[in-house]
Length: 477
Figure 1 (cartoon, rainbow, N blue to C red):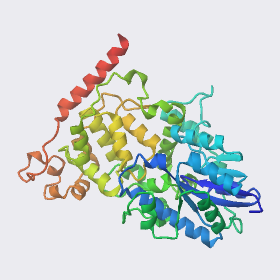
Figure 2: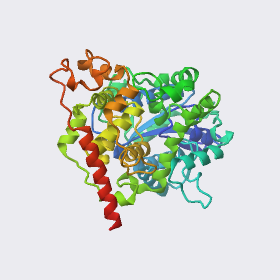
Figure 3: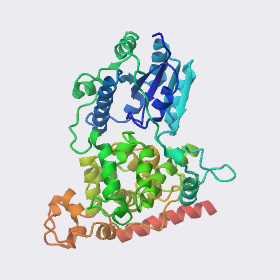
Figure 4: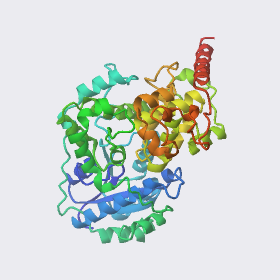
Protein backbone atom coordinates (compact mmCIF):
# COMPACT_ATOMS: atom_id res chain seq x y z
CA UNK A 1 0.00 0.00 0.00
CA UNK A 2 1.84 3.03 -1.29
CA UNK A 3 -0.19 5.89 0.21
CA UNK A 4 -0.37 6.39 3.99
CA UNK A 5 -3.13 4.37 5.62
CA UNK A 6 -5.04 5.02 8.82
CA UNK A 7 -7.38 2.68 10.72
CA UNK A 8 -10.70 3.98 12.01
CA UNK A 9 -11.81 1.83 14.93
CA UNK A 10 -15.61 1.74 15.01
CA UNK A 11 -17.12 1.08 18.45
CA UNK A 12 -20.21 2.95 19.68
CA UNK A 13 -20.43 4.89 16.41
CA UNK A 14 -21.89 2.42 13.91
CA UNK A 15 -22.80 4.88 11.17
CA UNK A 16 -21.16 6.71 8.27
CA UNK A 17 -22.67 10.14 8.84
CA UNK A 18 -21.75 12.68 11.53
CA UNK A 19 -18.87 10.39 12.49
CA UNK A 20 -16.20 12.19 14.50
CA UNK A 21 -13.38 9.63 14.21
CA UNK A 22 -13.95 8.95 10.51
CA UNK A 23 -14.19 12.64 9.63
CA UNK A 24 -11.03 13.39 11.61
CA UNK A 25 -9.10 10.61 9.90
CA UNK A 26 -10.28 11.78 6.48
CA UNK A 27 -8.99 15.27 7.25
CA UNK A 28 -5.49 13.82 6.99
CA UNK A 29 -3.65 12.35 4.05
CA UNK A 30 -3.88 8.92 2.49
CA UNK A 31 -6.55 6.27 2.73
CA UNK A 32 -8.59 4.97 5.63
CA UNK A 33 -9.80 1.53 6.64
CA UNK A 34 -12.80 1.18 9.00
CA UNK A 35 -12.41 -1.67 11.49
CA UNK A 36 -14.75 -3.25 14.03
CA UNK A 37 -13.63 -5.80 16.62
CA UNK A 38 -15.94 -8.26 18.36
CA UNK A 39 -14.12 -7.95 21.68
CA UNK A 40 -13.80 -11.39 23.24
CA UNK A 41 -13.33 -9.88 26.72
CA UNK A 42 -16.68 -8.09 26.46
CA UNK A 43 -18.46 -11.03 24.85
CA UNK A 44 -17.38 -13.30 27.69
CA UNK A 45 -19.90 -11.51 29.91
CA UNK A 46 -22.83 -12.15 27.56
CA UNK A 47 -23.23 -15.89 27.25
CA UNK A 48 -26.79 -16.11 25.92
CA UNK A 49 -26.24 -17.57 22.43
CA UNK A 50 -29.42 -15.91 21.16
CA UNK A 51 -28.61 -12.46 22.59
CA UNK A 52 -30.69 -10.18 20.38
CA UNK A 53 -28.12 -7.40 20.65
CA UNK A 54 -25.48 -9.42 18.79
CA UNK A 55 -27.90 -9.94 15.91
CA UNK A 56 -28.68 -6.22 15.93
CA UNK A 57 -24.99 -5.33 15.84
CA UNK A 58 -24.20 -7.84 13.11
CA UNK A 59 -27.07 -6.60 10.92
CA UNK A 60 -25.80 -3.06 11.44
CA UNK A 61 -22.26 -4.06 10.46
CA UNK A 62 -23.52 -5.77 7.30
CA UNK A 63 -25.39 -2.58 6.37
CA UNK A 64 -22.25 -0.53 6.97
CA UNK A 65 -20.14 -2.91 4.91
CA UNK A 66 -22.54 -2.69 1.98
CA UNK A 67 -22.63 1.11 2.19
CA UNK A 68 -18.84 1.24 2.28
CA UNK A 69 -18.61 -1.13 -0.68
CA UNK A 70 -20.69 1.33 -2.68
CA UNK A 71 -18.11 3.98 -1.76
CA UNK A 72 -15.17 1.87 -2.83
CA UNK A 73 -14.25 0.33 0.51
CA UNK A 74 -15.48 -2.17 3.07
CA UNK A 75 -15.71 -2.80 6.80
CA UNK A 76 -13.08 -5.12 8.24
CA UNK A 77 -14.55 -7.09 11.15
CA UNK A 78 -12.26 -9.01 13.48
CA UNK A 79 -12.94 -11.36 16.39
CA UNK A 80 -10.47 -11.26 19.24
CA UNK A 81 -8.97 -9.10 21.95
CA UNK A 82 -8.39 -5.55 20.62
CA UNK A 83 -5.26 -5.25 22.78
CA UNK A 84 -3.70 -7.88 20.53
CA UNK A 85 -5.45 -7.76 17.17
CA UNK A 86 -5.41 -4.01 16.52
CA UNK A 87 -1.65 -3.46 17.00
CA UNK A 88 -1.04 -6.58 14.92
CA UNK A 89 -3.35 -5.38 12.14
CA UNK A 90 -1.76 -1.93 12.19
CA UNK A 91 1.70 -3.48 11.89
CA UNK A 92 0.65 -5.73 9.00
CA UNK A 93 -0.94 -2.84 7.10
CA UNK A 94 1.78 -0.37 8.13
CA UNK A 95 -0.94 1.96 9.37
CA UNK A 96 0.34 5.38 10.36
CA UNK A 97 -2.51 6.06 12.80
CA UNK A 98 -5.50 4.57 14.60
CA UNK A 99 -8.50 6.84 15.08
CA UNK A 100 -11.38 6.14 17.46
CA UNK A 101 -13.95 7.80 19.66
CA UNK A 102 -12.92 8.12 23.28
CA UNK A 103 -14.51 5.69 25.70
CA UNK A 104 -14.95 6.60 29.35
CA UNK A 105 -15.71 3.39 31.24
CA UNK A 106 -12.89 2.00 33.43
CA UNK A 107 -12.43 -1.27 31.53
CA UNK A 108 -12.56 0.30 28.08
CA UNK A 109 -10.18 3.08 29.11
CA UNK A 110 -7.72 0.40 30.23
CA UNK A 111 -8.23 -1.45 26.93
CA UNK A 112 -7.54 1.68 24.90
CA UNK A 113 -4.45 2.47 26.95
CA UNK A 114 -3.16 -1.05 26.28
CA UNK A 115 -3.72 -0.69 22.52
CA UNK A 116 -1.96 2.65 22.53
CA UNK A 117 0.99 1.22 24.49
CA UNK A 118 1.48 -1.63 22.03
CA UNK A 119 1.12 0.48 18.88
CA UNK A 120 4.00 2.46 17.42
CA UNK A 121 1.96 4.94 15.40
CA UNK A 122 -0.37 7.79 16.35
CA UNK A 123 -3.38 6.84 18.47
CA UNK A 124 -5.95 9.62 18.05
CA UNK A 125 -9.15 9.79 20.05
CA UNK A 126 -12.03 12.23 19.68
CA UNK A 127 -15.19 12.89 21.69
CA UNK A 128 -18.20 11.40 19.97
CA UNK A 129 -20.47 9.36 22.24
CA UNK A 130 -21.08 12.36 24.51
CA UNK A 131 -21.52 16.05 23.85
CA UNK A 132 -19.13 16.95 26.65
CA UNK A 133 -16.34 14.70 27.85
CA UNK A 134 -16.41 13.94 31.62
CA UNK A 135 -13.38 16.14 32.20
CA UNK A 136 -14.92 19.18 30.49
CA UNK A 137 -17.77 20.11 32.87
CA UNK A 138 -16.32 20.80 36.31
CA UNK A 139 -16.74 23.12 39.27
CA UNK A 140 -14.77 26.36 39.43
CA UNK A 141 -12.05 24.60 41.42
CA UNK A 142 -11.76 21.97 38.61
CA UNK A 143 -13.24 19.18 40.73
CA UNK A 144 -16.20 17.10 39.47
CA UNK A 145 -19.78 17.72 40.51
CA UNK A 146 -21.72 15.08 42.44
CA UNK A 147 -25.28 16.34 42.01
CA UNK A 148 -27.20 16.39 38.76
CA UNK A 149 -28.90 19.80 38.82
CA UNK A 150 -25.68 21.86 39.25
CA UNK A 151 -24.06 19.63 36.63
CA UNK A 152 -26.93 20.15 34.21
CA UNK A 153 -26.78 23.93 34.60
CA UNK A 154 -23.04 24.01 33.89
CA UNK A 155 -23.38 21.47 31.06
CA UNK A 156 -26.13 23.53 29.45
CA UNK A 157 -24.21 26.78 29.86
CA UNK A 158 -21.05 25.21 28.43
CA UNK A 159 -22.74 23.82 25.33
CA UNK A 160 -21.84 25.67 22.19
CA UNK A 161 -23.15 25.11 18.70
CA UNK A 162 -19.77 23.71 17.74
CA UNK A 163 -20.30 20.89 20.27
CA UNK A 164 -23.22 19.53 18.30
CA UNK A 165 -22.29 20.61 14.81
CA UNK A 166 -22.21 17.81 12.26
CA UNK A 167 -18.95 16.08 11.39
CA UNK A 168 -19.22 16.02 7.62
CA UNK A 169 -17.72 12.82 6.21
CA UNK A 170 -15.90 13.55 2.94
CA UNK A 171 -14.88 10.05 1.92
CA UNK A 172 -14.96 10.03 -1.88
CA UNK A 173 -12.10 7.84 -3.19
CA UNK A 174 -10.52 7.71 0.27
CA UNK A 175 -10.93 4.07 1.29
CA UNK A 176 -8.22 1.43 1.10
CA UNK A 177 -8.63 -1.49 -1.28
CA UNK A 178 -10.74 -3.80 0.86
CA UNK A 179 -9.81 -7.08 -0.81
CA UNK A 180 -6.13 -6.36 -0.20
CA UNK A 181 -6.74 -5.37 3.43
CA UNK A 182 -8.88 -8.41 4.15
CA UNK A 183 -6.36 -10.78 2.58
CA UNK A 184 -3.49 -9.23 4.56
CA UNK A 185 -5.42 -9.59 7.81
CA UNK A 186 -6.20 -13.24 7.11
CA UNK A 187 -2.64 -14.01 6.09
CA UNK A 188 -1.50 -12.55 9.41
CA UNK A 189 -3.64 -15.13 11.23
CA UNK A 190 -6.31 -12.70 12.39
CA UNK A 191 -9.87 -14.00 12.80
CA UNK A 192 -11.71 -12.10 10.05
CA UNK A 193 -15.51 -12.24 9.89
CA UNK A 194 -16.81 -12.23 6.31
CA UNK A 195 -19.74 -9.81 6.03
CA UNK A 196 -20.58 -10.96 2.53
CA UNK A 197 -21.99 -14.19 3.94
CA UNK A 198 -25.50 -14.38 5.51
CA UNK A 199 -25.88 -12.74 8.91
CA UNK A 200 -26.74 -16.10 10.45
CA UNK A 201 -23.42 -17.57 9.30
CA UNK A 202 -21.46 -14.52 10.43
CA UNK A 203 -22.95 -14.80 13.93
CA UNK A 204 -22.02 -18.46 14.11
CA UNK A 205 -18.40 -17.44 13.58
CA UNK A 206 -18.41 -15.59 16.91
CA UNK A 207 -20.47 -18.17 18.80
CA UNK A 208 -23.96 -16.66 18.61
CA UNK A 209 -27.28 -17.58 17.02
CA UNK A 210 -29.38 -15.33 14.84
CA UNK A 211 -32.34 -13.68 16.58
CA UNK A 212 -34.97 -12.53 14.10
CA UNK A 213 -36.04 -9.39 15.94
CA UNK A 214 -39.18 -7.65 14.64
CA UNK A 215 -38.79 -4.76 17.10
CA UNK A 216 -35.31 -3.28 16.73
CA UNK A 217 -34.39 -2.66 13.11
CA UNK A 218 -31.12 -0.85 12.32
CA UNK A 219 -32.60 0.89 9.30
CA UNK A 220 -35.26 2.72 11.32
CA UNK A 221 -32.98 4.84 13.51
CA UNK A 222 -33.22 8.08 11.53
CA UNK A 223 -36.98 7.75 11.04
CA UNK A 224 -37.51 7.18 14.78
CA UNK A 225 -35.63 10.35 15.65
CA UNK A 226 -37.43 12.35 12.99
CA UNK A 227 -40.87 11.10 14.04
CA UNK A 228 -40.21 11.60 17.74
CA UNK A 229 -39.15 15.20 17.29
CA UNK A 230 -42.04 15.92 14.92
CA UNK A 231 -44.81 14.18 16.86
CA UNK A 232 -43.86 13.44 20.48
CA UNK A 233 -41.16 15.66 21.94
CA UNK A 234 -43.60 18.52 22.62
CA UNK A 235 -45.74 16.28 24.84
CA UNK A 236 -42.77 14.43 26.30
CA UNK A 237 -42.84 16.29 29.66
CA UNK A 238 -46.41 15.10 30.37
CA UNK A 239 -46.40 11.71 28.60
CA UNK A 240 -42.98 10.22 29.31
CA UNK A 241 -43.99 8.47 32.56
CA UNK A 242 -47.09 6.71 31.24
CA UNK A 243 -46.04 3.16 30.53
CA UNK A 244 -48.99 2.21 28.36
CA UNK A 245 -48.59 5.04 25.87
CA UNK A 246 -45.83 5.70 23.30
CA UNK A 247 -44.60 8.88 24.93
CA UNK A 248 -40.86 8.17 24.94
CA UNK A 249 -38.41 8.21 22.05
CA UNK A 250 -37.22 4.56 22.28
CA UNK A 251 -34.00 5.83 20.71
CA UNK A 252 -31.80 4.36 23.41
CA UNK A 253 -30.54 1.30 21.49
CA UNK A 254 -29.74 3.38 18.42
CA UNK A 255 -27.94 6.02 20.43
CA UNK A 256 -26.07 3.47 22.51
CA UNK A 257 -24.66 1.70 19.43
CA UNK A 258 -24.22 4.95 17.54
CA UNK A 259 -26.60 4.45 14.62
CA UNK A 260 -27.53 8.03 15.38
CA UNK A 261 -25.23 10.54 17.04
CA UNK A 262 -25.87 12.48 20.22
CA UNK A 263 -25.18 15.61 18.17
CA UNK A 264 -27.98 15.01 15.71
CA UNK A 265 -30.32 14.30 18.63
CA UNK A 266 -29.52 17.69 20.12
CA UNK A 267 -29.70 19.44 16.76
CA UNK A 268 -33.14 17.97 16.13
CA UNK A 269 -34.38 18.76 19.64
CA UNK A 270 -33.04 22.32 19.55
CA UNK A 271 -35.30 23.06 16.58
CA UNK A 272 -38.38 21.59 18.28
CA UNK A 273 -40.70 23.37 20.74
CA UNK A 274 -40.88 22.29 24.37
CA UNK A 275 -37.87 19.99 24.07
CA UNK A 276 -36.02 21.06 27.24
CA UNK A 277 -37.19 18.06 29.28
CA UNK A 278 -35.91 15.57 26.70
CA UNK A 279 -32.60 17.43 26.44
CA UNK A 280 -32.27 17.16 30.23
CA UNK A 281 -32.73 13.39 29.88
CA UNK A 282 -29.88 13.32 27.37
CA UNK A 283 -27.80 15.10 30.00
CA UNK A 284 -28.48 12.38 32.60
CA UNK A 285 -26.57 10.02 30.32
CA UNK A 286 -23.60 12.40 30.32
CA UNK A 287 -23.85 12.94 34.07
CA UNK A 288 -23.58 9.23 34.87
CA UNK A 289 -20.69 8.84 32.44
CA UNK A 290 -18.94 11.69 34.25
CA UNK A 291 -19.56 10.09 37.64
CA UNK A 292 -18.07 6.77 36.56
CA UNK A 293 -15.10 8.48 34.95
CA UNK A 294 -14.15 10.33 38.13
CA UNK A 295 -15.26 7.61 40.58
CA UNK A 296 -14.57 4.31 38.76
CA UNK A 297 -15.06 2.39 41.99
CA UNK A 298 -18.84 2.77 41.58
CA UNK A 299 -18.73 -0.12 39.11
CA UNK A 300 -18.54 -2.49 42.10
CA UNK A 301 -19.19 -0.31 45.14
CA UNK A 302 -21.80 2.08 46.45
CA UNK A 303 -21.10 5.69 45.50
CA UNK A 304 -21.92 6.78 49.05
CA UNK A 305 -18.98 5.46 51.15
CA UNK A 306 -21.06 5.14 54.33
CA UNK A 307 -23.18 2.46 52.68
CA UNK A 308 -20.24 0.28 51.66
CA UNK A 309 -20.41 -2.90 53.70
CA UNK A 310 -23.10 -1.54 56.03
CA UNK A 311 -26.28 -2.68 54.24
CA UNK A 312 -27.47 -6.31 54.52
CA UNK A 313 -28.00 -6.87 50.82
CA UNK A 314 -29.13 -10.31 49.78
CA UNK A 315 -27.97 -12.35 46.83
CA UNK A 316 -30.47 -15.11 47.58
CA UNK A 317 -30.97 -17.32 44.55
CA UNK A 318 -34.71 -17.41 45.25
CA UNK A 319 -34.94 -13.63 44.90
CA UNK A 320 -32.98 -13.78 41.67
CA UNK A 321 -35.41 -16.40 40.34
CA UNK A 322 -38.36 -14.17 41.20
CA UNK A 323 -36.82 -11.51 39.00
CA UNK A 324 -36.10 -13.94 36.18
CA UNK A 325 -39.57 -15.51 36.31
CA UNK A 326 -41.48 -12.23 36.91
CA UNK A 327 -43.39 -13.69 39.85
CA UNK A 328 -43.42 -10.92 42.45
CA UNK A 329 -47.21 -10.84 42.61
CA UNK A 330 -47.15 -7.10 41.92
CA UNK A 331 -48.58 -6.72 38.38
CA UNK A 332 -46.67 -3.58 37.43
CA UNK A 333 -43.35 -5.13 38.45
CA UNK A 334 -44.07 -8.43 36.72
CA UNK A 335 -45.27 -6.67 33.57
CA UNK A 336 -42.07 -4.62 33.44
CA UNK A 337 -39.90 -7.72 33.82
CA UNK A 338 -41.79 -9.45 31.03
CA UNK A 339 -41.39 -6.38 28.84
CA UNK A 340 -37.65 -6.61 29.37
CA UNK A 341 -37.26 -10.27 28.49
CA UNK A 342 -39.68 -10.21 25.57
CA UNK A 343 -38.53 -6.98 23.93
CA UNK A 344 -35.05 -6.15 25.24
CA UNK A 345 -36.47 -2.90 26.56
CA UNK A 346 -38.09 -1.54 29.69
CA UNK A 347 -39.90 1.77 30.03
CA UNK A 348 -37.87 4.23 32.09
CA UNK A 349 -40.56 4.65 34.76
CA UNK A 350 -40.80 0.87 34.97
CA UNK A 351 -37.03 0.63 35.44
CA UNK A 352 -37.29 2.84 38.51
CA UNK A 353 -40.23 0.86 39.91
CA UNK A 354 -38.48 -2.48 39.40
CA UNK A 355 -35.15 -1.29 40.84
CA UNK A 356 -36.86 0.27 43.84
CA UNK A 357 -38.92 -2.87 44.48
CA UNK A 358 -36.00 -5.26 44.45
CA UNK A 359 -33.56 -3.11 46.40
CA UNK A 360 -36.03 -1.77 48.96
CA UNK A 361 -38.82 -4.34 49.25
CA UNK A 362 -36.55 -7.39 48.93
CA UNK A 363 -33.18 -5.84 49.88
CA UNK A 364 -31.64 -7.47 46.82
CA UNK A 365 -28.09 -6.36 46.12
CA UNK A 366 -28.30 -3.65 43.48
CA UNK A 367 -25.36 -5.30 41.70
CA UNK A 368 -27.55 -8.34 41.00
CA UNK A 369 -30.19 -6.14 39.38
CA UNK A 370 -27.62 -4.19 37.43
CA UNK A 371 -26.24 -7.42 36.01
CA UNK A 372 -29.70 -8.75 35.13
CA UNK A 373 -30.51 -5.59 33.19
CA UNK A 374 -27.08 -5.79 31.57
CA UNK A 375 -27.94 -9.20 30.15
CA UNK A 376 -31.17 -8.01 28.51
CA UNK A 377 -31.30 -4.27 27.78
CA UNK A 378 -30.85 -3.31 24.14
CA UNK A 379 -29.61 0.10 25.28
CA UNK A 380 -27.39 -1.20 28.06
CA UNK A 381 -24.69 1.24 29.06
CA UNK A 382 -22.72 0.53 32.21
CA UNK A 383 -22.66 4.08 33.57
CA UNK A 384 -26.38 4.77 33.09
CA UNK A 385 -27.49 1.35 34.32
CA UNK A 386 -25.21 1.54 37.34
CA UNK A 387 -26.36 5.06 38.09
CA UNK A 388 -30.02 4.15 37.80
CA UNK A 389 -29.80 1.14 40.09
CA UNK A 390 -27.78 3.03 42.68
CA UNK A 391 -30.22 5.94 42.52
CA UNK A 392 -33.11 3.58 43.26
CA UNK A 393 -31.14 1.85 46.00
CA UNK A 394 -30.40 5.24 47.62
CA UNK A 395 -26.67 4.48 47.50
CA UNK A 396 -25.70 6.56 44.47
CA UNK A 397 -25.07 10.15 43.63
CA UNK A 398 -28.10 12.41 43.78
CA UNK A 399 -30.05 9.37 44.97
CA UNK A 400 -33.63 9.37 46.19
CA UNK A 401 -33.79 9.56 50.01
CA UNK A 402 -33.68 6.14 51.65
CA UNK A 403 -37.09 6.71 53.25
CA UNK A 404 -38.73 7.18 49.86
CA UNK A 405 -39.87 3.69 48.91
CA UNK A 406 -42.03 3.44 45.82
CA UNK A 407 -45.43 1.88 46.43
CA UNK A 408 -45.71 -0.28 43.28
CA UNK A 409 -49.51 -0.33 43.36
CA UNK A 410 -49.78 3.45 43.60
CA UNK A 411 -47.14 3.81 40.87
CA UNK A 412 -49.17 1.43 38.74
CA UNK A 413 -52.43 3.30 39.22
CA UNK A 414 -50.78 6.64 38.53
CA UNK A 415 -48.68 5.73 35.47
CA UNK A 416 -50.77 2.95 33.95
CA UNK A 417 -54.22 4.22 34.95
CA UNK A 418 -56.33 1.95 32.75
CA UNK A 419 -53.93 -0.99 33.02
CA UNK A 420 -53.08 -1.18 29.32
CA UNK A 421 -49.40 -1.82 30.03
CA UNK A 422 -50.17 -4.56 32.54
CA UNK A 423 -52.70 -6.24 30.26
CA UNK A 424 -50.27 -6.24 27.35
CA UNK A 425 -47.55 -8.09 29.22
CA UNK A 426 -49.78 -10.01 31.66
CA UNK A 427 -52.64 -11.19 29.44
CA UNK A 428 -53.77 -13.54 32.20
CA UNK A 429 -55.04 -10.41 34.03
CA UNK A 430 -56.80 -8.92 30.99
CA UNK A 431 -60.31 -9.76 32.24
CA UNK A 432 -59.91 -7.72 35.41
CA UNK A 433 -61.37 -4.24 35.77
CA UNK A 434 -59.23 -1.13 35.51
CA UNK A 435 -59.16 -1.01 39.31
CA UNK A 436 -58.54 -4.70 39.95
CA UNK A 437 -55.75 -5.10 37.42
CA UNK A 438 -53.36 -3.13 39.63
CA UNK A 439 -54.03 -5.39 42.63
CA UNK A 440 -55.81 -8.57 41.50
CA UNK A 441 -55.50 -10.47 44.76
CA UNK A 442 -58.81 -9.20 46.15
CA UNK A 443 -60.74 -10.05 43.00
CA UNK A 444 -62.77 -13.21 42.45
CA UNK A 445 -61.51 -13.10 38.86
CA UNK A 446 -57.84 -13.27 39.80
CA UNK A 447 -56.46 -16.30 37.96
CA UNK A 448 -55.33 -19.07 40.28
CA UNK A 449 -51.96 -19.26 38.53
CA UNK A 450 -51.00 -15.66 39.24
CA UNK A 451 -48.54 -15.61 42.18
CA UNK A 452 -49.36 -14.21 45.58
CA UNK A 453 -47.40 -11.07 46.52
CA UNK A 454 -43.91 -12.04 47.63
CA UNK A 455 -43.91 -9.39 50.33
CA UNK A 456 -46.29 -6.95 52.00
CA UNK A 457 -45.58 -3.40 50.93
CA UNK A 458 -46.02 -1.71 54.30
CA UNK A 459 -43.91 -4.27 56.14
CA UNK A 460 -41.20 -4.20 53.48
CA UNK A 461 -41.14 -0.42 53.49
CA UNK A 462 -40.75 -0.29 57.27
CA UNK A 463 -37.96 -2.87 57.13
CA UNK A 464 -36.06 -0.98 54.42
CA UNK A 465 -36.25 2.32 56.29
CA UNK A 466 -35.05 0.65 59.48
CA UNK A 467 -32.14 -1.02 57.65
CA UNK A 468 -30.96 2.28 56.21
CA UNK A 469 -31.36 4.03 59.56
CA UNK A 470 -29.21 1.40 61.24
CA UNK A 471 -26.57 1.74 58.55
CA UNK A 472 -26.49 5.51 59.12
CA UNK A 473 -26.19 5.01 62.90
CA UNK A 474 -23.22 2.68 62.44
CA UNK A 475 -21.34 5.54 60.83
CA UNK A 476 -21.98 7.79 63.80
CA UNK A 477 -20.76 5.29 66.41
